[in-house]
Amino acid sequence: MTNQLHLQYITSLSATEWNTWRQKNPQIVPDLRKADLSRLNLSNFNLKEANLIEVDLSQATLIKTNLSKASLSKANFTRVYSRDANVSLANLQDANFFGAYFTGADFSRSCLSGANFQEANCSDSFFITSDLTYANLSRGIFRGVSFMEANLNNADLKETALNQGDFTLAKAYNSDFSKATLTNIIIEDWKINNQTKFNLVICDHLFLRSQQRISSDNQIFPDTAKFLEFAVNTH
Image 1 (cartoon, rainbow, N blue to C red):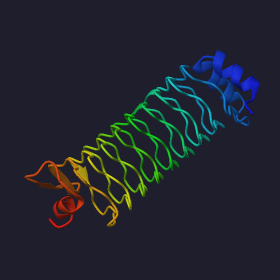
Image 2: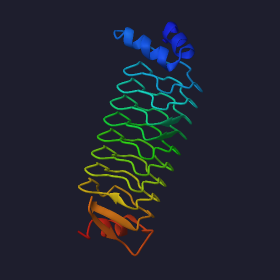
Image 3: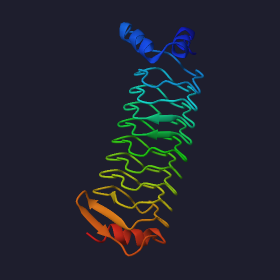
Image 4: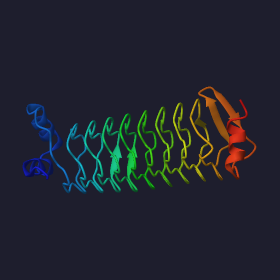
């Protein structure tokens, strides 16, 4: 259960006061399991390595918040407003980011298996080598995102804006990109299989490598076969 003293501190102290307390007590791991932190402004708070399992952060403000290495499985980030947060190396399995605004975040090397990013905006964020297996990114905005070496196997990316994304060495076996926007993505050495779906994707340009751009006369591809003919058989 939540440590009541830690809950009192985080709900009453400023970011500077909280961070000073943590600096003076490096042996203490904040225990805020299942705490209600909804609507709080936790910008610039140091929550590194904190226990935030099943925490409610819905509609919170998390600008430049440090959540690296935190335990955040099943955390609720619904409609959070965040910019430039550090969420690297965190456990976010089955976390809920529905409708969240999480731009410029660093999710690198985090576990996001089963996470829900429906209708979230994570533009210009980093998911390098992250585990996004079975994650739901449908109808989200992920423009300019780096998915380099990420594991997107069985992920739902239907109707997702992925323009200018970098999928170099990413794995997307059995993933569904149907109706997604893929214009100007980089697909160098990405891994897909015959169960990866690209029905009705929007894409008029691709980068087979970072400097090798190809164009298509089509903007919308009617099915997976037509898209793969363009993306795979042109190099």
